[in-house]
Image (cartoon, rainbow, N blue to C red; front, side, top):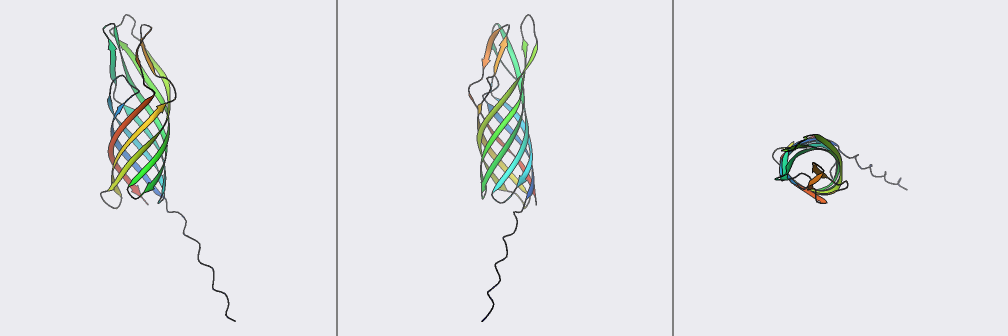
Length: 176
């Protein structure tokens, strides 16, 4: 009798690629008026899954009324897990950061900072430009888990809605 055939070889281990991206974005929600910003992200990806850490900084915006204004900016750090299907990715994200605000047109101007945490979802298209470079178009929506209120002379001049969102475009470099 012939010997049994050898077992099939094990599947190859997942191929990991290093990722680095830089996005420009427009955002609404946590600051007094819509703003622009930039996000730098890095992480790892297999065929179907990616893990990224990003840092985002927004341009300061000003809001208020005739009795006073508050200007604010934010810096966020996000951890993102995405599932990928061809050029589409769907993601979950957790974020933390700080909103820094300062008053203007008031008797006692001061600067204050408050912590910000959020959880949300994102979707992105990663369109190939070359074997390693992609155009990345993304949208995210996040629930603000900590309230963001800006006060001037003891009055709230901006209370962030419970949801913030952004649209972004950028370049993604992926190296195997």
